[in-house]
Image 1 (cartoon, rainbow, N blue to C red):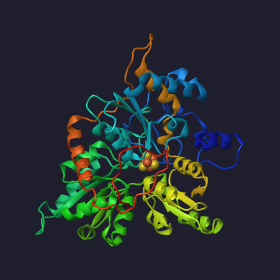
Image 2 (cartoon, rainbow, N blue to C red):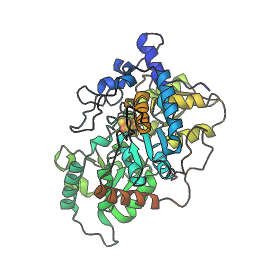
Image 3 (cartoon, rainbow, N blue to C red):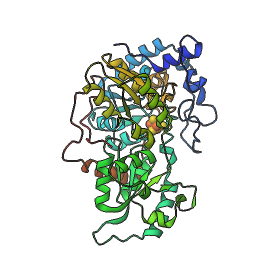
Image 4 (cartoon, helix red, strand yellow):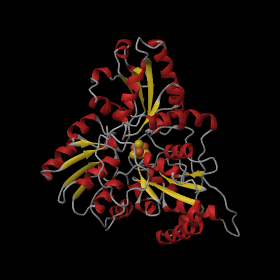
Length: 455
Ligand code: SF4
């Protein structure tokens, strides 16, 4: 199986050796060039988003890692891993570049990787090749003696950053003024807060403390059903699209899904609109999935008659409606694996995963809906150079004592309530799977079984 690297494709395009286009020429630059520049998400899908002040920044990567060739880094990573053995586990998200993912012990989506954390109690260190909120979740679910490491601290998530604790607390206080705090005759409280997994630990804790819950793109419908049993309405953050697409599929009218923009009075809605609300949608989005359009789907149907279009539920509603199906990264992988040979798929999710699926399934034709190569900016900040650096830090040497670099630790008072919200999600597991189990591609994951269901 050839597994083309998005990074090498970008390099070829940037030098004119290959046709195609990228969303930024800076993608061909090594990510450490952005560590000392003004704070930004870096080139890629989130490059137009405003990064919050105070976002974690990565210090300078030592020169020998910056100068090392890809081949040298590969050898150094393998050597350090062999030395550490079971003392370390490397988790890799589907959206990571291949140069990093080839070293992962477990590959999966954010929830699969969080569960994998729990299945590796022997590992002293968990290196999370993903983004900041995922490493926080791994810390919440790992043992107290285990250190969770994020190879590049600048690997945040622009969507997660669109909802912060102060803004959500302010929103909550306004909703309490509007709705009161007393349950109705059936015992349902006025509002249940629901946060997407793609959020800070502080917001997961907010949900835990206020009777709320966490959801993933795999179980959003199950979680909303849980919330509607306990509340008259839901405050859903930070991704408006996942909230809208899921609630719409459950039959909630769009007129009962007002948006909450934290920069506007009452979130930009009227008191009457909020009074009638079933789901209040936070004004957040993923810049990767916002790139997909109805026009791209129409084009794919013209150029590839019979194509099946599958998109992620973080895509805008019009895109989900125009697609043949929508679901999490796990759902997309299973749908492709279950299809008869010779099928054609146009996929609306991050390019690294789409190219990998295409390589894993040569029996199908698989392409990305977006013809422009534009990876997730923050996932792209993780590079083999940082992975070698944190691994060799754990090994140590005669000149360099062993050390844990870039540890991600959630404060104990935050962790208590965040774990409550995560446990509620686990308890909300539906009794019967909505999506029938199908074989998983061999390199996808060896994590524990996922919560089932799809938005
Ligand atoms: S793909 Fe979107 S939601 Fe996922 S890490 Fe990147 S910006 Fe965040």
